[in-house]
Image (cartoon, rainbow, N blue to C red):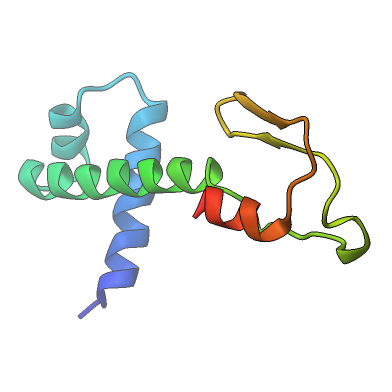
Length: 100
């Protein structure tokens, strides 16, 4: 019997193949002898995993501050492109508190 990770890889491969085809989910399942409700279950897991990967690419990166310039001016650029500019010196502790 296959373990869950092997089944996941196999089903995600089927989903990728289906997406590159011009077939409906139902006709793809019939052609490849896959139960439609099983395909639908794995397709939901596939979408959730893709959304999670996308969300993780828009997360903050670790803040590294050179202690010799810890009180310098700062500009914080958010993943959506919005910018937060500090025209006065700010400490690294202030920035950490702001983004946490």
